[in-house]
Length: 292
Ligand code: GUN
Image (cartoon, helix red, strand yellow):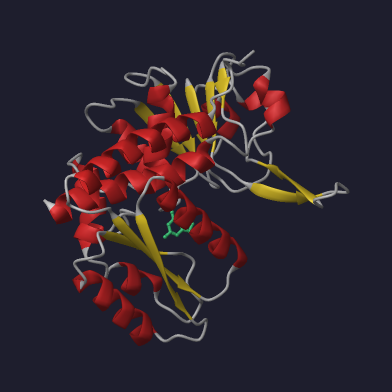
């Protein structure tokens, strides 16, 4: 029997993929063509290779076109900017991402801010961040959008609830805090970070606790209010003696916190699949804008 306590991100992402695939099929049938997502991958970072491969696979699974622009680890800023200039101007490309992190000698801000904001499906350009802050339609960053979609599709009430966000990164903590507090979503948000005092007192006030701190199994049961909804953004490989040699855990001590939470996301299979489907959602939006 399905466990109603577990927020099944994999299942919700599959439902969203079917919705997106139906829209892609309509675009193809009506002659506008399939949405095209490109990714710029600089170097051979292991996690980045895996993420980009998953994004390509997800694109294909909904009928979208995907291409990857692979550049050497030794590329200069100028080399990367040339690729960006090409992608900005190629009408065939509806949206693209530059996979992060970039090699240390590259100015990440300079590269990201060179992306044409109409194609910025990660929502990382200042223009899209500004629109998000104003609560205007924009490309919303994938993980925050995925988290909000998870909550909505699990029938978790958000308006008026106290949401405590642990972590203030540019990709997750900060944007999800802003998005949840905008008109129409209407949560009351507290952001906690490494300098926060009385952390447990704050986290115990959360109706919904969103954890994105990058610290394996940091959140224990005594930090969570009875009946709270817990969203775990963390993903860590822990070495063990199993055949695979590792197992995956989040930022939350799942077995402990499961007992006090009313709903909780597993790791893997919670937020992760939602991030990728959110990128597909943004790519569909970009294609509709580009091809209309
Ligand atoms: N690296 C880790 N997460 C992300 C993401 O959401 N987008 C990009 N471009 N790079 C990442």
